[in-house]
Length: 306
Image 1 (cartoon, rainbow, N blue to C red):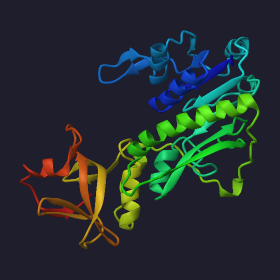
Image 2 (image 1 turned 90 degrees about the vertical axis):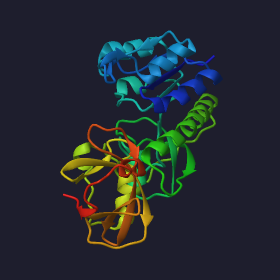
Image 3 (image 1 turned 90 degrees about the horizontal axis):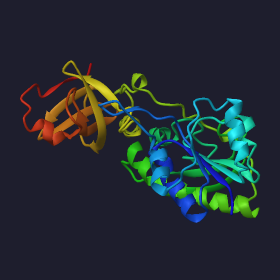
């Protein structure tokens, strides 16, 4: 029986943990320390820790520092055959070299495209029609290791980052199981990445999520959907921050940055046409379909986003 160590933290990694444990059995789970979450800020475990508990996995490590020699010693004592890393922190060489058959990461893009912390967001922002997941052997430079397996997924028009996140979870799980199998049987042959084709996918922040209405409407739409649901693209409407989650193409013209409400539709003008704002959120309110907001709206029917 193989000794497999699984490392991950968010919900995205949970299906892979479940699938690997069902197929092989996971001996140890490594995840982030418990921390305050939600409105009540009660201390609670990560999604991966909770999944591990539900699966009956009792050996759970939650190191505060991955560079602590004691952590490397803990991993070495488990004599791992394979280490699977999904949506976790950057492992030092002293740790990822400990697995007999190899340590690999499953990344949510078709590497070398979208190296970085937010590949799903950037795939949508870039207007990609196809993405996928990649498993690769860990090395000293983030997301640059030799590729083991890739699985592709089409991106339907209008998909948000949140929807793509959900769609990629089972694909990441399938890829993780296949990679474990290949490493344990010695049947995988790693291929180097073409660094010339690499594109960055840095973490996205609210501070850089303001909408630039002077861009073409396809660019604006992709940006909005790529930031949805988090950190969420925003603009200023009637003096308040307006978060926008979903849009669609609509006929019409207007000066970029102007808006109008007509026939129950909230229209926003971009450089080469208009978008219908279909889902939004006002301060202190929940996320809503736009028609719900407009049902009781009695304000101005046109203006300019600030």
